[in-house]
Amino acid sequence: MFEITLVLVLVTTIWMTYDSAQLKIPVDSKPYSMNNGAPAWFLSGLLLWIATFPYYLVKRSKVTGGQAVTPAAPVAQASLSAELAQLTAMREAGQLSEGDYEQAKAKLLR
Image (cartoon, rainbow, N blue to C red; front, side):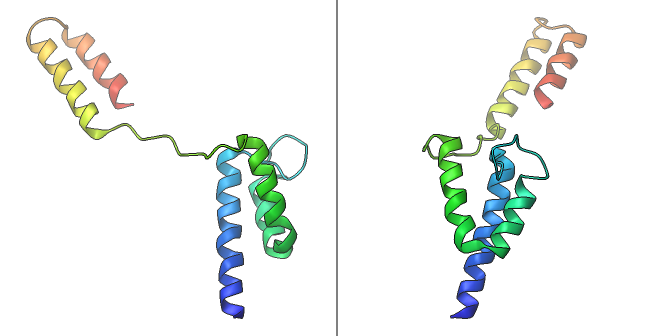
């Protein structure tokens, strides 16, 4: 039973640390910083998990407005290759100069 509790505390504390860093959730009312952000959530989660975890969930719901937070979707590789193919076709058709093509390609690949 102790091992299960330990794993639960560690996993939820690591999640609190990661999530608070992503959402910039401070421990107190001051602006988010390294002094009252993710490291503070980690330490308080390890030392006082029974009080910290519910408190974090309340702070998180205030920051997110109670909405589920999903990570930003990465740019689809298929659409990137399609845009590059379109740029290449435009260059070959004479619609883009070599300089414009390189500039647009660099912008896409950033």
